[in-house]
Image (cartoon, rainbow, N blue to C red; front, side, top):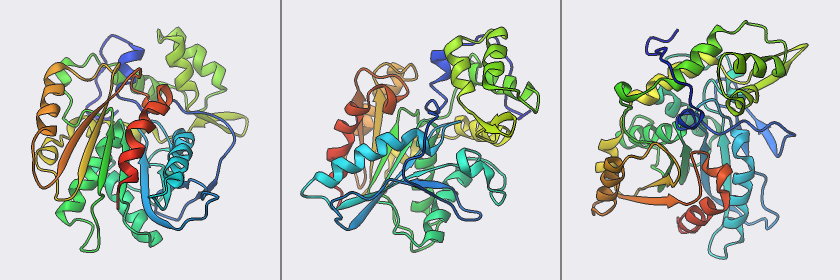
Length: 334
C-alpha cells in the first residue's frame, strides 16, 4: 500500500470525481494508435480533409485512471473547429496515455518513481523521440492538469534541454493547482484505491466487480464507473491501468503545488484555468486567489474561465461549452 493512503469512512461519488479523471468509455477504436518502446502511447486525431499543413500541435493529458481514448470525441471536435478557421492551419491533436494508464501501462520501459515530475518528463521524451515540434498548446484535465503545469515548470527551468520550447498556452481543466489539505479530506479516493488493491488478482467479470463493489457499500454509479476500467484478458478481465503506479501518481498529484508558477508565469505563456461551475473543489478563497492572479500583469498571463452547467467531467458534461471557451483562444495561437 502506498504510504500516503489512509482508510477513512465516507464513500461519496461526487467527491471522488473531483480527483479522478473522466469515465472510461468502452467502444471501437477511432484513428490510429501508435507507440514506441519506452515512450508513452498516444492517439493522434485523424488529419482533417482540408489537407492544410500541420503547423501547430496540441497535447491532451487525461486524469487519474483515465486514458487517451476518453478524449477522442473532444479532440476530433476541437480539430474540426480549428481546421475550419480561415486564420488557422490544421492542428495536430495528440491525446497521450500517461504512465501507468491506457496502453502506456503495458510498456515495461517506464519505471518509477511515478510522480508528476516523471509523468511530465515522459511527455517531453515522447516529443524528442518522435522528432516532433514542441507542442504549442498543452491541455490537462484533473491530474493531467498538474502534469501540464509540471511540464511547463520543467520546460521553463531548462530540464528538457536548450531546444525545448514552452507551450504558448497551458489549459488546466478543473484542477486545483495547489496541494491537497489532507486534514480536510474524507478519504474517498483512498478508500476506492485501497479497495481495488484488496481485490483478487483474477477478476471473473465486470458484473462480478460491480456487484462486489456495491456489496462493500459503494454506490451503483461509482461501481459501474470502476467496472468500466476493466479490459478483457482471455477468460477473465483485468485493469486498463497499473494500479500501484496510479496510486503513487495520485499521492504525488495531491502533494505538489504550482502556485509559484501561476504567480510568475513564464514570458509569452498563458495559463488558462477552467473551473467547472458545479465542481465541488473550488472554495471561495481559492476562487479569489485565482481571480487576483488573473487581474495581474506580467511577462506571462493567467486567465480564469467558468464552464457553466458542468461538474468535474468537463468534456463529457458540457463539451460544447468547453469548446466555446477553448477553441477561439487556441485558434489565435501563432
